[in-house]
Image (cartoon, rainbow, N blue to C red; front, side, top):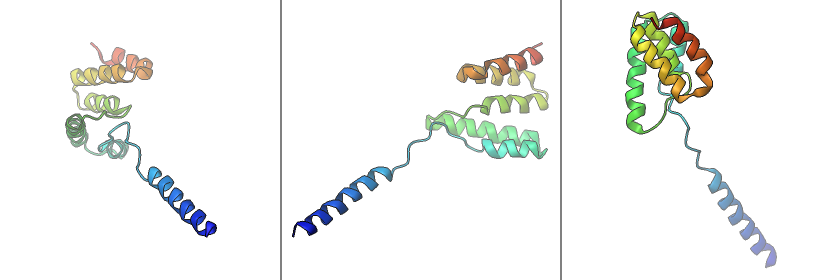
Length: 116
């Protein structure tokens, strides 16, 4: 009888343990189509379409209360530079620098290059 109780208890303990592991942790960042846009950029696809997709992602991310990942604003800034919109590029680089201070050295380099 004790053997059955130990087996039942062990099975219940295992079930409780596994149920605690079943929920995935909430993601720190909301990526949207960022990775797809980086790949599209490397493939030389239409820059304006990439900008529109990333701006749309920013609206969705903001509405969900999440945060875009590191590099999101920097990549968007580079797309703005490539389409001739230096003012938006500078704003994106400054946002990247403010949200992710570890990017300050690179963002300062880009800001110095594109501020006129």
